[in-house]
Image 1 (spheres, helix red, strand yellow):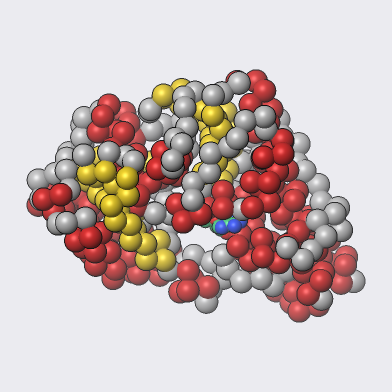
Image 2 (cartoon, rainbow, N blue to C red; image 1 turned 90 degrees about the vertical axis):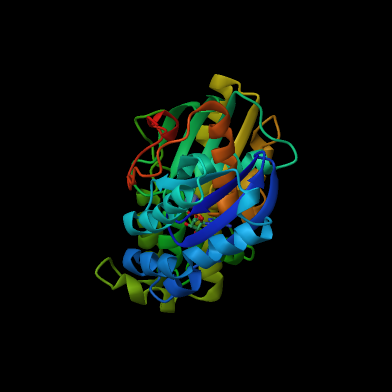
Amino acid sequence: MNVLGVESSCDETAAAVVADGRRIISNVVNSQIDIHKLYGGVVPEVAARSHLEVVIPVIDQAVREAGGWDKVDAIAATVMPGLIGSLLIGSLTARTLAVVKNKPFYPVHHVEGHVYANFLMDQPPQFPFLALIVSGGHSQIVLFRGHGNYRLLGQTADDAVGEAFDKVAKIIGLPYPGGPSIAQAALTGDSHKYHLPKAHMRGKYDFSFSGLKTAVLREVQTAVGVDHTFPSTKLAAKLTPQMCSDFAASFQRVACETLVDKLVMAYNEYQPKSVVIAGGVAANQELRRQLRMRLPISVHFPDPALCTDNGAMIATLGYYMSQHVQPTDPRHLDVIPSISMTKTAWNIPS
Ligand code: KG4
Ligand code: ZN
């Protein structure tokens, strides 16, 4: 069964056709990173307009590369969570196509989609598995007992870890998106140069990253000899390249340790068969290194290109939904911008 997956929840317009939730036939991603770089972050209105310009050509290319509409058996699209304007463009286009082309439609939860990128790898995870979901909008530990059957164990109380990478990069003068720039700068940095704290949370598996970001800000101010009244946008110019790398490496180490400490605790408590990591930050090599060192089983990672937003992960989740639940009426036009992983798209009535 071939599923067309459409993704537009943030700053990537993406479409892919995947066979049986396993084999990628086509995978087209149009990233807006170059546009948002100009502003140092994603501008929602600009993102929605850019999706509008490219959504049809992106879907068209994915379907043509898969052999045309006859080869598409179902359509899945991200309808939650994300930027409302961005979600609307992709999901309305996909739903309209489902009506016009007479295909069953499956509404997808973006964060679950990230987890399902792991089912595209040579060795898919086995249930029950623990998922560490780390992206620009999410930092969560979730226990998956079966398809559509999962429990949120913990999440961030404030900033997502990817958001912290992006904000810290801005403070130390590295380009957007912050994750890859910090990872690059950290290669030549001393990860123990600066002392940065780990937040203690009431919830056993909860995280907090906004304190870590503020701690970086304070350490940078101290390192360059200014107080908190000095404009943060002018701090980076006072850092030497070595200081910048040392801050990148110190922040990256502590951010990853914060995630891995909790994941190891959850592993010990739940003894899952597999552990998967998903979302844009899953591309981070330091995070992978720490996980390899501290967990007794090998961790499932998607290929780097499948860690960031893409249509293949949405198509894969759509395939598994098609095996377990009824499609929904594509004339329901709802999108849900903000939703945690306590509610899933699997139980939306058809
Ligand atoms: O999953 P994603 O593409 O979009 C969201 O759903 O948020 O994740 C984007 C986030 C950004 O915050 C970006 O800085 C981060 O993932 N990221 C990384 C790396 N590559 C992307 N963070 C750390 N290390 C990386 N190599
Ligand atoms: Zn994402």
